Length: 306
Image (cartoon, rainbow, N blue to C red; front, top):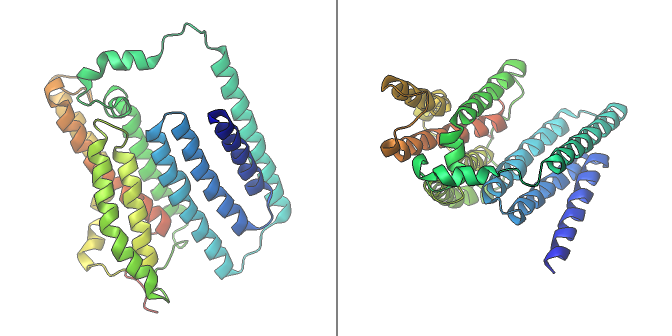
């Protein structure tokens, strides 16, 4: 029965991917892509990778789906038409790259010797030195914290790139024509805040952490923008400081560790959990703000009145 579920999941994944690439209806392709992201998150859950499954569901399906729907809506408002020849070439190129990367990854995995030592064993041997019990958090925030620091830089650079390349390609919030969306947002926003805080705190000992919590905050920001809820003027002045808060927290901790005679981001064992929690809290806020601004497409401004 379990194998039947897995086979059905794989077949459905391939069907969604193929239909989203080959369909001529852009809206249908976007909806299929969102469904594909949800199915991928189920696949990661079946592979016992709940951290990746949470991130995929929040970012790969939810926020990316919102970005694609926003782009489709902008095309509809501008009455833009698609170049069918160019679109077909792009789809075949995407399909070829996907197949090539998939085959390459399969060859690499199959070429590994069967007696190759697993990294998970090395992680478990040193998990007590990391300050946390969740192996994923230990890798991302301690053993390989350089990688996570650079990911924060890449996320910030992507937003700056959008502002530089397309300064006017942005979503202009306006009051929704129905009060249902605003009422739903007011109902969900407090709940999403609690969920984000819970995922952040849980990340030290179980699946969760800054990226999952930040994705929930990003979804909250998208809902806030879509519902065009009121915000005080001082909130706009806080956007840029919050945007770089995660990166500054990383750099501050790096400076402290080097100042006490250790390597960059080499935490003292007794203070490791505190430093990781500080970095993750700051990173959660920055990730949430960055994802919201990626959806907005530009620097926030007071919403237009309908």
